[in-house]
Image (cartoon, rainbow, N blue to C red; front, top):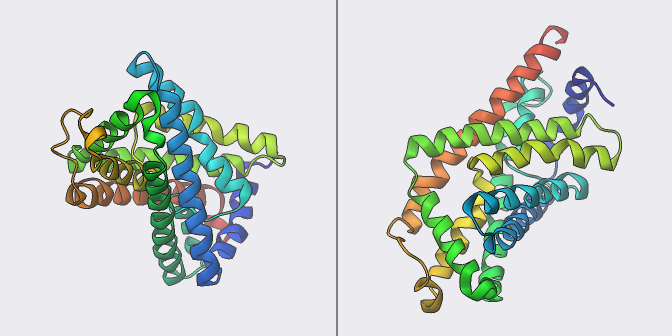
Length: 266
């Protein structure tokens, strides 16, 4: 197993390689990551749709959703939230701030496309017909609840979320075998879903899926209060504060580990 100090040193090379990816490859890998996270969100929704209570549904979702980061890390792709750790080589002056921003912007755009494509595929393939339309009602209510969050609460939940996501990436780097990586990343992701924290890339699936499902009269009739579910609330009431919170949370963790293990070695 790699020690935290070894992880920090290893991430200097990992982050530098991510920042130096050609734009086309970077974007394509980001589309894949967005799709992987979206597929995990879809699977988590299927698992929880038939649950007898909200608590049981949340627990089932938390058990399934770590599949997303597992695919991202093991298959190789670029995830906006995890890439906040590139701040480590930036602070160590091995990656320029401009290259860091370039990576985050391109990866965010790719993640967006991947998430929305899976959302559209789930809606138009009628997967939401499962459980007598219960899947559709759940997707719409989940999206509406996310859009109804106050800005500050969404921001704070975003901070906590990416502290855990970046911690999952960090812990996975401690392992030297596949099973160890999967086991290490599972629990931080499990906790963020269980606690209801907000992940911008996951929301690029959940909220568009709810908005698209709302357009089907049969499905929209199953939903209750959907007044908050609009594209404007999605973009500015949820996605903006959650993205900012995710950025801050990830960078806090990156700065902390750089300061502890690498700062004096510049």
